[in-house]
Image (cartoon, rainbow, N blue to C red; front, side, top):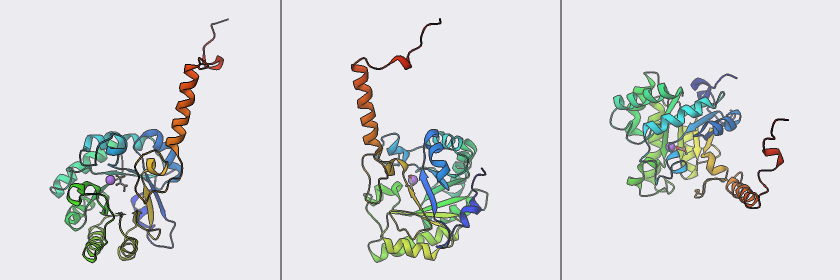
Length: 268
Ligand code: KIV
Ligand code: NA
């Protein structure tokens, strides 16, 4: 099975196309399980909270993204793999961003990077895109800016904020982003952004009118404890893991595990 390409993703713009399916993946086994069903796998910097128990994505490093990105590429064959640029690795200048992004792609074999920010990042998006690095934008609620925003509430409730989000999306799209994530915005803004810009818009806490959807896999599987309103839980894996471990613990304590099938008989 051939891996999806950036031009193939770009072509999926528009309400007449099948929506793009995207989930986060951080590990090889999860990548293997998600890959057959997804168009894109995102190695999100959300791994800071989900895998490492960090308080935000701010402390996540390039080295962490590279290690998990390589694992996800090894575990996937079909989906386009996109790696988040962590906070501090790209904002200072287009040159700095190119250095970080090219290193990530060399380390992992992934095809594209994602970076947060709108108009302020447009020059950087153009710099990378013109030099062979496909960039996915990310506007609206941008979690790396939590220290400026003061929290993770929905964006775009005031007219000024709404206008800024639409302008940000347009700026990165015009600069050459091949797709743009719109996160945590009131629905009319997500719809306006989707209609306004020329590349696929991937929604999270946005609207079904977007050209695709993304969620954190652990959230939609019911594996992570704290989830925002926009997460639909498609399973309760935390409950199922607890129940399985409870059975294991009971078997060990009752000396009923290991049983006959799990022990090696001596040679006869
Ligand atoms: O890091 C992440 O998981 C993300 C998605 C939720 C868009 O950026
Ligand atoms: Na992210």
